Length: 193
Image (cartoon, rainbow, N blue to C red; front, top):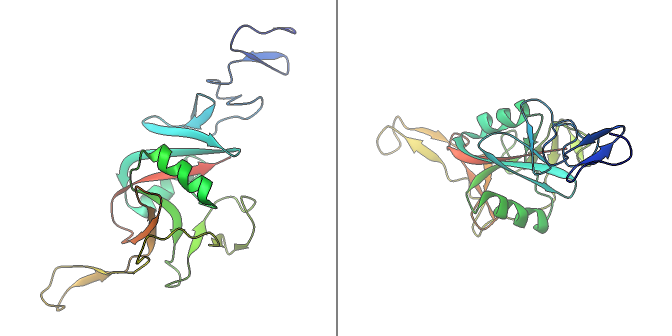
């Protein structure tokens, strides 16, 4: 390729690459998309999901409805984790990426009721790591949330009912958060390098 590359290509070492689509140089030279991710418009993403690069990180929003654990596992399969929202700008970006669709984020209180933790796969992703999870410092709760309203099914007047807590967090259409039963089926947003 030499010193000059064709229109739309970037010189990466001694190779010309289209950083909008090249999985080995996605968005910039040397940043490869991992696993099943492909490069679209300079963002590592997966088929049938929308991707966006924001503040040096990739975000993938998938409208396929999954429960929280299944969504978390799908993000891990992609070499990512459910989105960790650290501020108002990121919350607004997620509203735009999701098109206002309610979606799972990586916050939960499954281990201890009322103690919310972010689940991440990369301990270097942020500070404050505690047993593989991060205590939540930024909060964006909707009015009257979290309320831990229990979801109950079956039985009659509390007899024989199966009740579950609301331990998993989703971002609403306006970007505020709501706690849900983790088995609720929602869209989800993954985040990664």
